[in-house]
Length: 489
Image (cartoon, rainbow, N blue to C red; front, side):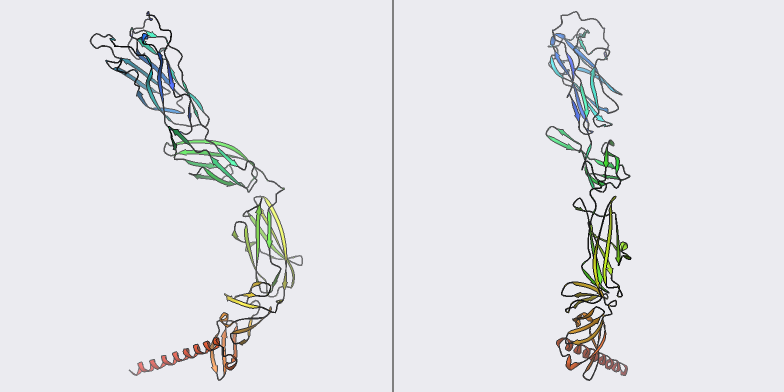
């Protein structure tokens, strides 16, 4: 007993019921590492017991929680009987709280001349706990045990018989994670979702400042404040996935582990689609397109090889030229040599997606000349001409196709090349009149110089070039005159 008493056996008549202590709430489920309170209540107390003192040990598992506060309850200090006040004492030890409380007697007579003795039920003390570790699914008890074998003392300093206490069990909720799909393939996106820590206090739901620290078991790790995350496994087999919850406000970590099995389905190959066009020409800057898909979705291949063949012989390895355009979409630029052999060419593309392979091939023709009578150069930029025919729009290097200016008729220039004859607007050739000799004008263009009679080229564009040349000449003459005047001064 915490109090100095003389121990004798009770001699008065005993009530039919015996008091007991109860720890509430019961049970306790912690869904997150948060501080919580338990109350120790007295139950079933009859006034005939003439109770004046209560003592107990509140025991708990110190590996999971620690005591941060003890508060005196209202029952013993009720003014209906504690007219002289109370005396309370407690001590916090590892794994237990020792508590005792005594209703004080009359200071003069030393007697408990109370108007009535305690009865009924009420709160003796409240204890606040703080989690110091958290193991998902762990369970432990918080118990009100007898101190030195006794709980209650009466006014005759006798111990009062008691019924068994009702204690509480604390269970930590499962902080775990799930993933989808349940049996993923190598290279497939796996979505992980962690259980979000939360607590319901009254009608208010509390959230927690949480960092989710993922270790996917294949060497990859990721820390995030989002409970959802995705990962792609490149290796088949089993991997131990570990999720560590970190609560920075409490400096507490909680770890959970699960095993994921990654498999490869040999029945589902990587889809590889290639578009190379049907016909190309010597000197053309061709562009081939590749699309990679898996299980109906576009995916970025982990490796892509492209090889061009002609007549069954490897002509060029284009793997280094493969360029990613969008998810699963690639382009392969290829400049067809000016001396390329006419005939059928084959492009073979092999792709790999985390161990899942796919292969396809496409053929196209290379023609020595344009197979159309309508060929126009739309633009020329950086030595590459965009050419429109009656069947397609293509690009070709003007040097590779040996493009050269033949004639000018008004604003239209005729161009000869290894592909055939084409036309274009003078504006695409940066045409400039460099000299005029009588009725003959010399015009400089991107594709060379040409001489033409002014009488044959009196179009608006030619007149513009002519006027521009005259203005340039006048500007030069004026500059010389100004210079002479300045020298005379």
